[in-house]
Length: 125
Image (cartoon, rainbow, N blue to C red; front, side, top):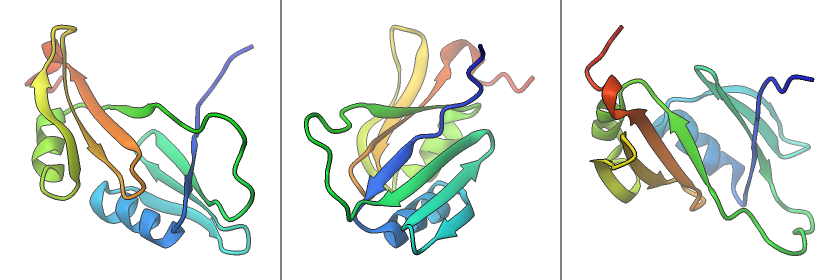
């Protein structure tokens, strides 16, 4: 048995604002939308996410408590693009685990981290 992909569904109180954040700020493309279901699908390169406006009953127990970590090929370029467009959680840094990364929040407060192996910085091959 093989897992082929993970496509998270992000719950939002305002699907239009969230589509705007992901398309205008992060450069995702809107692949599909169903207003009756209050649902949308977005894609950028090999990353796909879905959105759902959560007007139905909230689940019991724990909500989402993690972050979304994007592996990218030019973290410094993305940092330069996003650092003034989104609320920054932590600025770009090379960490002891040999990853160069930073984090921002999306319009819903989800934590989005962007990272690249430090040994691949400046390596365009």
